Length: 252
Image (cartoon, rainbow, N blue to C red):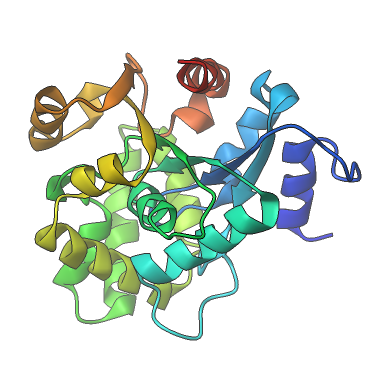
C-alpha cells in the first residue's frame, strides 16, 4: 500500500465499505503541498459524518502530468475526482481555491460547494506561487523558494512541515503552476471567479491575508467565517477547530 493509499484509508475510515452513504468532501492542498496537509482531520468528528477524500495533485504527491501543469489542467483532475466519488463539496486551500473554482465551472462537474481556506482572492494572494514567474529556470526557483521557506521557518515553526512537503514536489510542476497562477491573477480577479463558481464559504484569519484581499472581502458579500489566531495551515495545527468551522459552514 502506497503512502497515499494509507492516508486515504485513514481519512475515509471505512475504505472497504462499498455503500458508504456519507457525503464526500474532496480536500485539495495549496501550492507545493499535498494530501498530507489534511491528515489531522481524520481524527475529528467531521470524518464521522463525511467521507474526507484528500487529493494528491499531479506533481504534488501524484505522478506529474505529461503536459504543462496549469490551473486548468489540475482543475480537470479535480473535476474527474469529483465525478468518480460523487463529491459535491470541496475544501480548497490557498491557490487550490482557483483550481476548485475552475473545476466547479465545468458543466459536468458535480461540485456545488467550495469551502475556501484562505484561497486566492486577489493577485497579492499569490505571495508564494506567483514568485515562480520571476524565474526562467525551474531549478533556480525551487532552490530560492526553499531557501526563503528555511528563513521563514526560523520564526514560524509551522513553515517547517510545509517546506518539507514542497521539497518533495516535482520541480517543473512547481514552477509551471506558480507561473500560471501569476499570469492568471494578472488577467482576472480570483475572488470573482470563486464567487461565481459555486456556493462558497470563505474561512480565514485576516491577519494572514494581504490588505487587498481583506478590502475585497469587506466590499463583497461572500459568506465567510473568521478563524481568529489561526495560521495559514489550520488543518495542520488546529484540525479539530477547523473541523468545527467546516461543519458550521456546511450547516448554514
